[in-house]
Image (cartoon, rainbow, N blue to C red; front, side, top):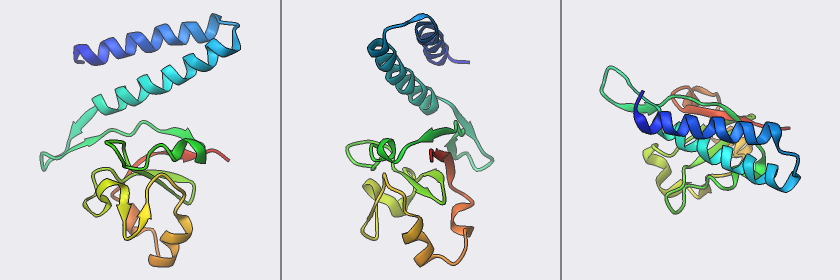
Length: 136
């Protein structure tokens, strides 16, 4: 395991302890946000190579609210995530989703209705990285 990843995991453990023992609601809220940031950083550090020497991020699944999903619109260097049928997919590396836009659709949203209008089945989703699910 590389040193940067070890460092991030140590930071996660410190933040976890803060969450466990802290009674201040404001500090807990800030700590939860820090934990989310650390987990996203760790997600970016974890890679695996397939047989074609392409790198892909190993899935670290989490739950998103629609409000949180909006942050992942593919703009300004952000990742491009979309929800379809309750599943959140990472489209950041997809050539057809440059800067989080695809045929006028913008990432960071639930695009189930739009997807179903264009595609008869889910075969287009099978090769995409699943990042998480939408909280109900």
